[in-house]
Amino acid sequence: MVWQIKPLPSLKGAITIPGDKSISHRAVIFAALAQGQTKIRGLLASEDCLQTIKAFCQMGVKVEKNSAGEYLIDGVGQKGLQPPDQIIDCGNSGTTMRLMTGLLAAQSFYTVLTGDESLRQRPMDRVIIPLREMGAEIWARKDNFAPLSIRGKGLKGIDYRLPVASAQVKSAILLAGLYTEDGVSLYEPCATRDHTERMLQAFNLEIRSNGKQGWLTLAGNSLELLQGRALDIPGDISSAAYFLAGALLTPDSSLRLVNVGINPSRSGILTVITAMGGDFSLLNQREKNCEPVADIIVNSSKLQGTVIKGELIPRLIDEIPIIAVMASQAEGQTIIKDAAELRVKESNRIKAVVTELSKMGVEIEELPDGMIINGPTRLKGGMVLNSYGDHRIAMSLAIAGLLADQEIGIRESESIKTSFPDFQNILGEIRGGS
Ligand code: S3P
Image (cartoon, rainbow, N blue to C red; front, side, top):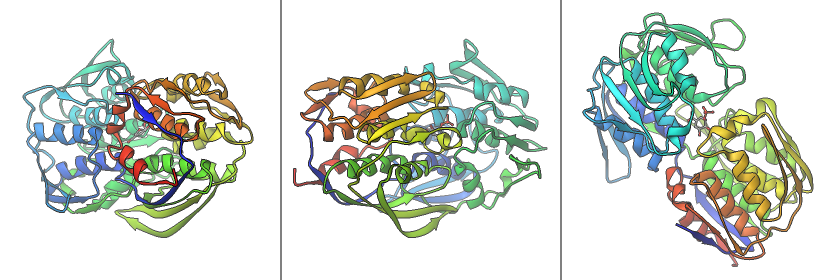
């Protein structure tokens, strides 16, 4: 579907940011494995999260939505999952596939996982290799790609150094580790989002440091301790990022973004906005199930270029396409490096951003692991751009479209439903003075 975006002079109002995608997946997984019922408020009902819900329904977990919009999940306990009688389709969701691979490798039954065309091209050896070291039996197309078939069995613990900074890999090993006798210890080369660790804590299970710098340890056989509970999911900072950028870049804008998760392992976008000279403030800081949350007020600002690299990258990995749009409007040069992982996301995001923003007139150069952008540029419209079926590219181009000199179209914009089904409606609601 081609979505037409008209330029907008300003964005004004308040938006409640929908639930965090990463935390929603984990809430469903832990609720399904707990004893008793978990009530989840604010769960993100996007296509990706619905794939995770569907996977558990296929394995005998009862999931219901009540009249208040809360999800009620009847956990089946550590050994209660049933063998699915059909292939599990993870759709576009890398988180579903990688986390489920860890979990399913430790079950007592056989499963097959597949996904859409994009997901079937994304590397899975990053989870297969450590899980095989734990004793898992997993087969993959070309030993790396879905469909994956998994013959679940008893696994042993592992001490593992992650070769890539990936929360999905970390979480897959932790989920498998819950079923081992001796537990798992992990070393992260660079800290990644710690939602699995915080969700374990919310369920009263603890990740410890094993005393060695950079290592974290999960004791084995811990699952029997999981009890159902009430969970409240914070809003997704990755979804808020589009509105942060929209308000910063359009004149006379002011938005209040309500209920945004500001977990430091995710809030790299705020570090970048500060470095670029953007005007925002955090209000009403609080905590929801071990996750920090705030409201964010953001105002139009004149931005300057910056350098984004190293340990900052995992803290904003999904925000790089929208940061590139911000950089196109900033005075001077922005350099983004150490982000080669972007090439194996829902699309090759380095190529996608460079190709589409170049069409809009941005001075942008592709690097093997990032990009260099020289700003500011008045964006050209009057064309139809490609989103490559990638939700984050589609939403980033939509914000670029607000700034263009003419309307733009965005192909395959339906992909936005994977993480932010209400994006188009919300953008419609906050147009001020257009
Ligand atoms: C996610 C981790 C990140 C991120 C993805 C969600 C998660 O992927 O890009 O959107 O929920 O754990 P990697 O673990 O591959 O870096």
